[in-house]
Length: 383
Image 1 (cartoon, one colour):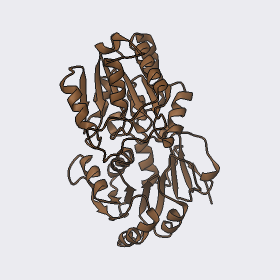
Image 2: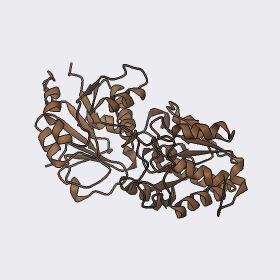
Image 3: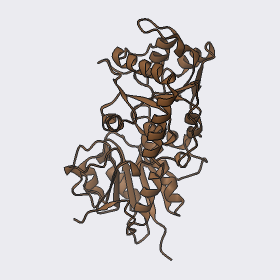
Image 4: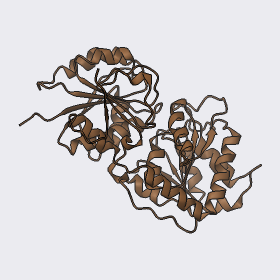
């Protein structure tokens, strides 16, 4: 009987880089585990380990090995990482899937002799000499990928959790619930900026928006978390959500959404919640623009106004930074218009659900565990 496939996931999550990398790696890991693969996560430090464990279905869902290193300097972790991988007793080389914006060509070159490498890339910023390249924001190939042995390109490979495999969704005649997804740390204080403009409008006035319930998706890593709780305690229209397990159900209960770029846009697309996006980091631009160009999720613009984002270590009493006023008003215009137009919401929802089927993690798992399988889901390139 063949050995079980050994897969290591090298990723991190913290107050600076949020949870997106961890969540999509978990989706792939669970799909691989369903195919009887042996899964281990490798993280840089205790903060990443704690955040990863908080997202497990059970405390011991997967083993975690902590390297006790700086997540921003991957090449310095190589001795510890290679030593750990060298303990592998199987004759077959293990897979190491890397999901980090700090990976470098030198990092991959050092790993290749010791393991099969997979890279979940968003940036298209350097040559990716790996065994499997995954980029789900676009189907377009690029010169940086010419040395990748195999490539999984396009929305079919968006790694979403099982709950996003075509969940039910109803477009309701009357708008009632609006989701505000601003990232786990919300470094620019977008949630508070939007709520302030909705409930205490200045140059933008639309009383209709005050009649809806707002569901803020955040985490305790947000330095303004307690300030948001204080707002909710005095406003029955405001609901704060953190550590949500059944995200598809929360999204499905909402009629509209506002979201920063990232995997959340893909999840909203799979559910079919009419959404407006905004930029708050350059690494989000490709995905945000791709959704906008396809006519699926319009982009209101860059939320940054040139000011430094709120640091995760900031005092909870510190006010959020100034936001791009034009982007804020575009978001509020979208909510005002779409909330009153059920036909447009229905059409947007149909288009979004037709674009993403939520099976990307399964397709990636198949490519990792059954690399010789040919089902048309990947493009194979010989060296």
